Length: 114
Image (tube, one colour):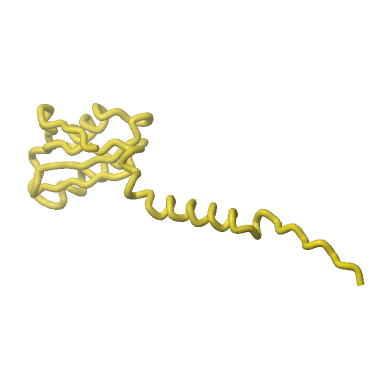
């Protein structure tokens, strides 16, 4: 009986493929941790909010803007945190959207978080 040469494994059956998939999975699972490097995070002082209804009003209007991934308003802290893609929307448009709701963004209190 002649000896057959061992069959070469396909790439999908190799340890390299398994390592590649493991690394890719790890990067996708940890994306929220390093996503701040891809999106801007701005916290602004917003005056005029008196209840959680005010928070919802601001959040719903700002979420309508393209490129906004997260909005969190807090009447207790008088602040609004917005994560957005600077390629799709500018901070001036976000401030304008908040001001159009009847609340006021304190222009001198803008700050960029990294």
